[in-house]
Structure formats: structure tokens, C-alpha cells
Length: 238
Image (cartoon, rainbow, N blue to C red; front, side, top):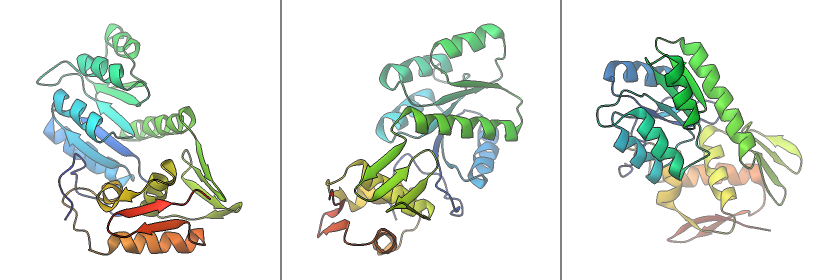
């Protein structure tokens, strides 16, 4: 079993496509539970916290891909959370989800750096569409394509090509390859890589990581993934 991290939500069945990691900062437990479950069914990996300070700490220690932020939090105003978040992370996409739907509130949130704003009550399909759009913008705002030798991994579309031919990846294979390609040549430990693949509390077989490495090696070809015994794995730079 993995050691605790902020990604402690029960894992959904693994979808065919790679999941975006989403942090939900919402103090309404019943709303959060239903929303998190619906998003997991859509393929998102969801973590939920109820306080602004917990959300800021989660972002600092184990940054998600997207944030849904409620403004009416018990320990601090959501706009203060947004202000502090933006002081340290200008690129992390944030969708403000709140019952405060006045123009002044929307303007304040957008001026502080929110990427989108959705008022409660909301339609789940609309929320999902907005999150997908934010995820696409995230891929284009950062390095959209990671390239190393004959490997090309498109972050926006989650597509891999090897020598120009498309190669299908499972969600965990994608997460594993992305982690290795982001730091080519650097040895990543087992704990680091498992933290990219599994949620806290999820039972992980002792050889699970090795199985994913084996499958990935077969798809990539050659000896591009190097094993450093007793330490971890790295992606060869040439």
C-alpha cells in the first residue's frame, strides 16, 4: 500500500485515456462527494479537501493539473486562496465554482487569476466541458509535445508516436512515460513513480511498477528505459 499523499481519493476503474489530476476545494461534503464521483466516472483523478489552507498545501506539495475552487470556505475566503495560489503558481488552471454569481464577484475572481467561473447550481455536462477546455489550454500553454530521440509525446492529446507511428498507451503507461520524459537521464525512484500512478490507500502489487515498465519497454522498443538497481528508473537521452 502506498504511503499517504494528497491524492487519497478511491481510484476509479482505469479508463483508456490518461486522466487529468483535479483538486476540488469545497467544504460542502455532500456536494463534493457527488461531484467527485461524477468526475471520476468521466476519467478524472480527483482529490478533495474542505479547507483553503489544505488546498494550498496540496498544491504546493503535490500539484494537480486543474483546480475547482469554492469561494465560501470555512477558514478563509476563496478569493484569498486564489490570490495566494497565483502568487506562487501563475499557470495552474483554476475554475471557480460558487453560489456567488454577481457580476462584481465574477470580475473579482477573474481579475485575481481565475481561468473560468461557474455559478451554482450548474449542469454537470457544462462543468465537464469547461474542465476539458481548461485541460486543452494547459497543454498548449506549457510544452505541448515532449520529444526525446524517436519518441514524441503530445501532452495536450495524450498521444505517443515512436518513429512517427502512433502507439497506444494506458493511463498508467502514459503517466509513467510522461514522468520519465520530463526528466530525461535523471533516475526517478520507485516511490516517485508510484506516486504518479497510484492513489494513497490503493493496494499496489509488489511488482506492479515492473509490469508497467515491461509493457512500456515493449511499446517503445530497444533499451530506452534504464534500470538502476536499488534506486529506480531513468529514460536514456540517446
